[in-house]
Amino acid sequence: MKPALYAGLLLGLVPVQAALLQHIEFVGIRPDLCLVAACLAGFLAGELEGLLIGLALGLVQGLFSAGDLWLNVITKGGAGLLAGLAGRHVTNPTTVSMLAVLAGLSVLSGIIVLVAIRSGAGLVAFLAAVRSVLVPEVVLNAAVGTGLYWLIARRVRRQEAIPRGPAGLIG
Amino acid sequence: MFRTTSGTRRAALFLFVLLLSVVFLLPQQSRGLLQNIGQPIAQLASFPLEAFSALDHSLRDFWDGYVALHREAEENRRLRREVQQLRGQNVELQEMVAASQRLAGLLELKKKFAPRTVAAQVVGRDATNWYRSVVLDKGERDGIRVEMGVMTPDGVVGRVVNTTPFSSVVLLIIDPNNAVTGLIQRTREEGIVEGTAQGRARLKYIPLLSTVRIGDVVVTSGLTGGFPRGLAVGTITRIDKAEGDLFQSAEIAPEVDFLKYEEVLVITDPRPSGESHEEPALPTDFSKGPKP
Image (cartoon, rainbow over all chains, first blue to last red; front, side):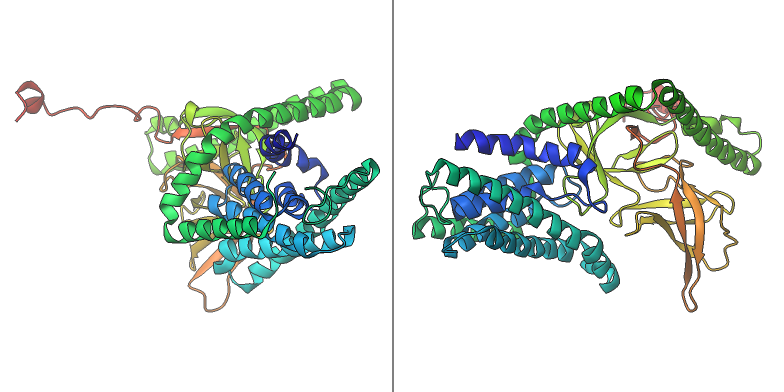
């Protein structure tokens, strides 16, 4: 089940992001579904799975983006890894903790990208990119990711079969 | 899938640190390696991408065609296409007039506006929010390579920055990371066209003594690879001349509506069609005799 889910994410998530998400963009910005998926995988299933899913999604995303390939691979892989480490240290995972993890990792990932691509453009351009891209993206990532986490957690609780994982949901 | 023990944590951290080291120590090699690993996955992912894009187009067509008054939409689309073609022709004609004034009698300059192209469809936008780029449904298998120029009948769209066998990514001219050499059509002065954070373009390095004015048309200069001379880039809407600066700059409203186009032409050979693959004629003496 899980390998099929991951294969589906790997082949379907970037096409959805590139072809369909433009219709639900907010101030011209779409949620970064690859970052959200990497964070959820890390938070729910552990740091190694988060890292591997993040690296794979970052690779595919990089191939359909104008940016440097390694930048997407590193940021998504790192986000999955850090989400896994965060999930391990959260004793009672809630939607609020997921919101905080997603927002924090989106900010971190966005700042790394901005430093890599806009560091030579000056402080004004940097701050403009923070305001126009980073902040809306963080809000969208946090909202979408938390919503998905809430749905997954509710489904798991309803089934009353909660294997113990790093964040207490999926083993 | 994996047991979450301190062992897997160490393994994950080790793997990540190893990857970081490889990326920073061997940037070129790691990029090539990542590209090779990703190519098969990208090939597989390009099929759902095209499927989603087709679904998106058909839903949009359905909405435009049937729900939002079928006939009016059809007529509107036809007229819009015609206006686009006429605009492109108008800029082309203006450029031809300017050229013929300078080079009277050389009517064959018309051929300069017939570069070799490959038609492609836009199937998606950039997979991240950090770049203004589009994904095309044609790639290396169709002869598309990195650095090739992309245009519509309206004018310049951007240049190819990334390719896979079945798709390619085009960085738009309104992206701050893009730069194309431009020419003010009326004054024949050159500059660099760069994208701005606001989604427009800017012509930089215009000489201080230039007589550039609002409304002037900017075209490609043909000096950098990818574009022939004379393709419309946009119209100047504002001129900035700061005290103490060595150059002035101008804001350009691009000719292409970057939200609406669906088909583009990738310029595979920007040279005029008459010049493209002609072998230079050998001098009579050398062509007749044996090779030295």
